[in-house]
Structure formats: structure tokens, C-alpha cells
Amino acid sequence: MTILVLHGPNLDLLGVREPGHYGTESLASLSAGLDALAQKLGVTLEHFQSNHEGELIDRVHQAWHDGVAGLVVNPAGYTHSSVALRDALLATRLPFVEVHLSNVHAREDFRRTSLFADAAEGVISGLGPDSYALGLRGLAAVLESRSATG
Ligand code: DQA
Image 1 (cartoon, protein in one colour):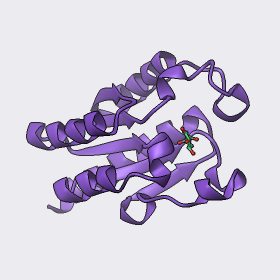
Image 2 (image 1 turned 30 degrees about the horizontal axis):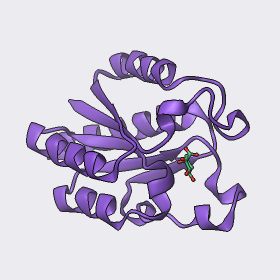
Image 3 (image 1 turned 180 degrees about the vertical axis):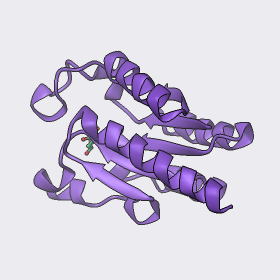
């Protein structure tokens, strides 16, 4: 089973970007940690980060064409603005978990609005890289139980 981990804009700068909010771990290190967890869970990960909305949308379409089972998504700034990325996830009907490194509810008001949360299997926010790890565990469990029950 393959899961796509999708990262939105500015997450390529993890480690140097506003460490008070996003910590000091790089995206490469976070991804390596997730790969190790995925191995334990018996799933395969693909990773994709882009600063461009259309590229993220194209990658969701590609995942659907490729038969990817679901996504762990941090839409980053697009969380609060991208109808088009939300539409891509709804169009493909791929199950996904929304994750955020920071607690979006403890920051500016505009970060409290997510265009993804109501369509997500679950949302995890505020636990740093553990948000991704927990999101991956949760999504793998959802997909497992769905494949067991058909
Ligand atoms: C973020 C939170 C968003 O509000 C912000 O725009 C990001 C990162 C997070 O992981 O905490 O870029 O998604």
C-alpha cells in the first residue's frame, strides 16, 4: 500500500523557517523518520513538496492515476485559501489526513479556518513532526480497516 505525503508552500524551508512555530528539523530528516515508521507499518511512502498550487493539484491527480491509497497532507498556507487543492482531493476521493506542525488554533484567527478539515479522515495540529507520524499511523489504520472490510 502506497501513501503520498504532500507538503505545501514553504515547507521546503523547515529547519530554518520560524523555528518557534515549526521546529528545527529539516524536511529531509522529517521524511526519513516517516519512512522508518512506514516500514514498521508495512506501507510505502512517496513524498512531494511544492510551492506551487497547480503542481500540488497535478501531484494529487497523479497519485490517483497511480493507485495511491491515501495521503498525509500539510497544505501549509493553502490550508486557509485553496479551494482548488481541496477540489482535487474531493475529485479523486482519495482519503487523507490533514496535519500541521504548529497548533493552527493557537495562532492568528485566519489560521483557524481550514478548507480541508471537514473532508479529512482526521486532523492533527500542533505536535511538530509527531503530527505527521500520528497522521500516518491514523491513515494507515483507516485504510487497513477499510481493506479488511472491503
Ligand atoms: C502549517 C500552518 C499554516 O498556517 C502555515 O501557513 C504553514 C504551516 C503548519 O504545519 O503548522 O505554512 O501548515
